[in-house]
Image (cartoon, rainbow, N blue to C red; front, side, top):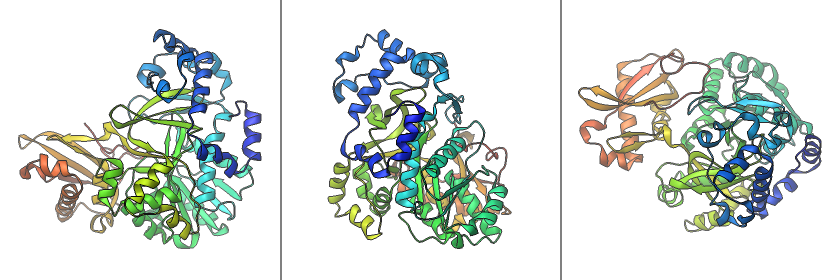
Length: 497
């Protein structure tokens, strides 16, 4: 990988997507990870100091088994332990030119430096989505960045990468209203009619709000051939179908694409037509999903380039990755529950259920790439425990996506286990109402029934660990944007402890 801005820019601009992705389709990424390890050990003061303290010599690291013996890094034992300049190559922050700030969803916000050359591998992820899923190399495309702007990573990083793709010759124009719904709708009304397709990029529940608000203003989304790029949250195939219906979009494999990204290292993987086809098949085959992922719920399923981000499954079924950034990260443990499959291993698993995902993609006139897969359930610390049963936000989302509830809710909620209600702990769910909707008591009863039914259907722990007297959740309904649970302008959290 080119390490200076000029050569990295020239390589990205001058190299076709197929050639950029080919190494990751044919290799496992270990040689690149070992090369990054050597650079970090020799040139990153913090990492060199950590290896010295652990009495580890990189001369003894030769293969994947050796690599797996290296210490796992995280914010506490590495990022916050050393001065910021000690985390970058050469110990000089001047080697970078930009700071991003994490959203602080797990604690205090963190500063992440990067240089221009660190953006191009991430721009390839956007190019893959735009080309393989949306055919943006053939269609005049309006990209509307709906992530928050400012110092937070999502909006600025996305905008930068989109500009690099446009510089490569794609007929792509970008507008950045940020997370202001009125401004998003204003630019869509004004600009979308002049384009062959419009791509909205943002967090899933927020983009659904945008779509619903546009419908309220009589925007005919079907006329604009709208596509979505989402990030930050797992969503169900029911949610995908619901939003596709509201967009009047019938291309299920290539209309909504999720990115797996972190502030720490940009976009790590992305949904592809192939991964979406697999996920949609598994949504109808829970026994197959359980066999593949070990869970009743569906994770986000992405493909990734192992030569850019080298993934491992580590302790407790969580993910670690290694990748080059402003602060190079070796075996960085992000605590996301999930795992990885090689392309061949995934294909063999699906063959057990007589499903040929490549054929399904080819039937849709799309391309399947032979990249490995990473699946992600999300952070373990967003899960609640109630009488020993783990409750996941995705299960509550499934309930709110039912037609009986989705007509008058936004899809946002906050789940809590509250002590002292009738002298027993109770599982509670605060639900956000759609704009101009009222907290009718009959709606509370309906929401409690639907959430309970979904929990009993999709969470065997809840059905078996929690007594029948305690199973029914306590639902409260809150106005849209209520500051107690749904403050505007900040990243939403789906659980509280």
